[in-house]
Length: 109
Image 1 (cartoon, helix red, strand yellow):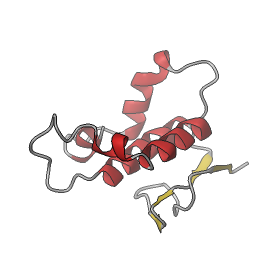
Image 2: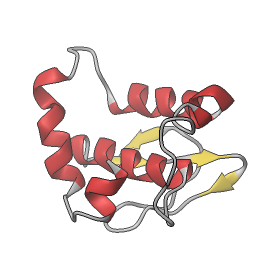
Image 3: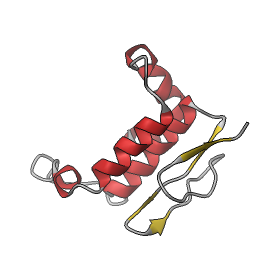
């Protein structure tokens, strides 16, 4: 997803729409973000592609990929404020997405 958004210029909304037919019935943005946060804390997850991908794009990091994944989740639930952090560092998500903190979401309604 990172390559698609950052290098090909695809929109998070467009990517999110591709997954709609495959989204489980009980899927929520909160569950997706909690799952992502849990995986980001797992060294095996963070390093699982290292042996398969010999050359990474210069700007790519697992955290940059996670930010793009968060933006895709945000595109599914645009009425939510997405909040995320990893390793004690808060991140800002560019575009229409708000300041980022712990890996929870809050309804804007």
